[in-house]
Length: 482
Image 1 (cartoon, rainbow, N blue to C red):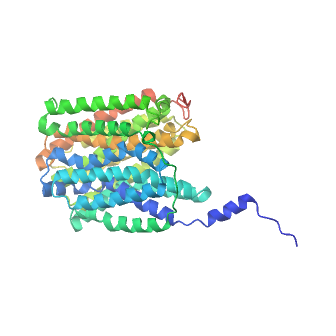
Image 2 (cartoon, one colour):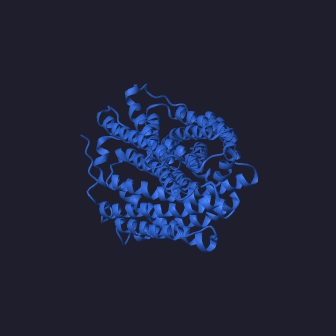
Image 3 (spheres, one colour):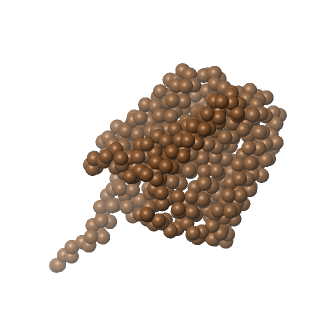
């Protein structure tokens, strides 16, 4: 009887079948911690504000500090994960995140908590790209598809779940536990990760390979911008403090662009800016994410401070919003077969504008079912309709060799948009009243959603003018490497 040697394809298939899901499990646990912490703090904001005696302008920093550092540091984190040992970067990020979470829970004042949240954000900027890199290098074929599907599900459901989890923990224990709960979870993941993640060696890169000047310039520019916006309630829009912060932000962001043109290994390669579909799609993603996360921020405060909801009831009140976002994405997927990404995105944004104007009519005597729920559902469908065509357009015509840079660019727009959305809408809301009292929060909520409607209108006009008329076209798919 003659035996036939197995083909290379069969050998690879058998090896793939033996891959343990343990690596995916550790990577997903880390990403769940990262994603939950985007929104878990929202339902605890009034409790934290009362406990630490924070003003209305300070509350938004608890959200934006995390988002700003994670978004601004994301491309540097990806570069670090590519150049150094993925295992080392992942475990370092997870360890820092766990420690920063514990420190957040022990914070005795707003400054300490904001600083700890910033370190959480920087840790997330290391964790996310290194975790995804571990998945991509560990699995292939059907396993990789399944792993990426779970990764995407965590990302899309995590923000909504964070609001509910934060509400439940704050109601049943205290706000400190929304951070402390990360401690044991992170520690177990760290111990398991040290045991199961294979050691990998990487060449020793030079400092020039990391583009630290570019990373510091963009983080400093974003921090100055958010600081200026956050200080408008206390200092006013035209005060020396505010104008100095905006001026410094402008100078640092211009310096960032100059640095990127001259850097040996820039975080944003110059050719990325020539990809029209990617740039336009990321700009729309930035705007719509700002509206989405800003909505969660303002509504969380309104439900608790004005309507007197508990943190848990507030979290439950966001479930229809999460479901409507999912419904919006389903609608958009079907519409892509019949309409252009431009028209779908513009329609979704206009729907969001209408919903924001509807929410702006809510007063101090508002009822959730009549005055809040309809606007939340419509806004959720609207923003959900935008995410799908923006993702399709942004990656259209991008060669596989540059898919990582392009997706990192889009993810950065998503995170920075969330931070700026909260900062801008909080600053606009604060022109009508403080977010820490019932009367002030009602007026601020109304003014904030007028601002959201204005933001949505600007983004809709941009989408109408810049996004492609047909899928996969628009003149943005040619890559210039010189």
